[in-house]
Length: 213
View 1 (cartoon, rainbow, N blue to C red):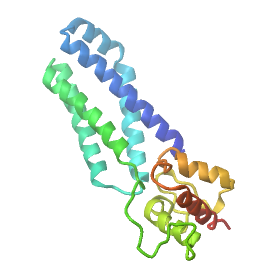
View 2 (view 1 turned 30 degrees about the vertical axis):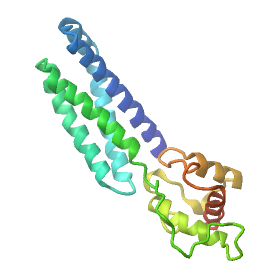
View 3 (view 1 turned 90 degrees about the horizontal axis):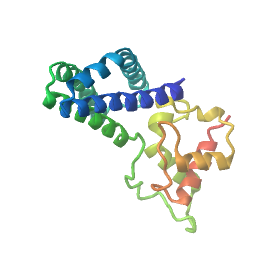
């Protein structure tokens, strides 16, 4: 369900933005008659998109692993853009209409920047990351990275399920599939191929596999 609503939300955000961009361009070009016709023809689809946009957004917010400042700023931008758009396009106020579109774009940008789990904060000094070191402990490394990057959504026991994350205790993915998922991400889970080394990814793969019953 989470995956479907996440994709629905992303689609409605894009459609919502495109609608307002078209209307803004027409307004800035002083094509008032064309703008009125376009608004009349898209009135019902626009309302449907707005409902889906806000409804799915609220659901994703409730399911979010955390509410941080980036998310708060995104919400402020979204809820400020809607009344500004209504007033701006109704009154043919180019400044307010432009501001509403800028806020929507800003909210989209903040959402893309706010990737939960993306952290390169240094690990504890005692954690050995060199696989060739005599005291290298793969499970200790995997746990340290999991605690830093994955625990927020998966939970300490792998069962939390925040932000649509899967229960790691019942996963049936192969080692290769888990590694691919860590590398490339999926849905709300960000990719880690540019953040973690192969040794670190292998350590995380081994650690999450240990959750299985």
